[in-house]
Length: 151
Image 1 (cartoon, helix red, strand yellow):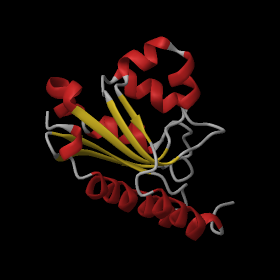
Image 2 (image 1 turned 180 degrees about the vertical axis):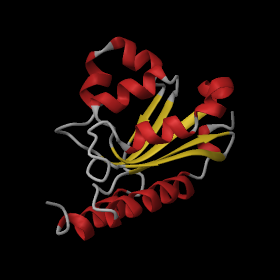
Image 3 (image 1 turned 90 degrees about the vertical axis):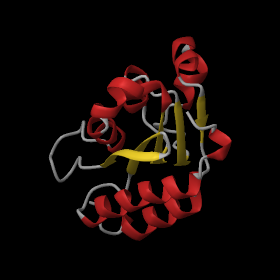
Image 4 (image 1 turned 30 degrees about the vertical axis):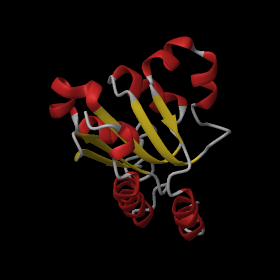
């Protein structure tokens, strides 16, 4: 795996922001995610909870599902980028998918997985990198742009 310090976080978070924008246009929460393996995007996802009437259609889950073909052999080399801190369900899914590195834009103190990382030793052992603040201002602007459209 390429060293994390050599990864262009802004490029990959920008790809997640594009997914988030598409979710917003579709009437869903503007959250997007991408999975990266060996410096290439191998999975994309966006929130589709409202458009699919399914509370499990989170961006992170979709990105992991669409990267299944690559993750099967190189899962521990993969990185997940998401525009908003993963919820506990998504963090559990990320752990079960053996993805070791997570980067997010906006923190989500109410629903995000930071507490899980702090309180559950297994989570902290499995996730080696859990870092927020990447293009957080862009994520926040996207939320503000679409919040009038949300019911």
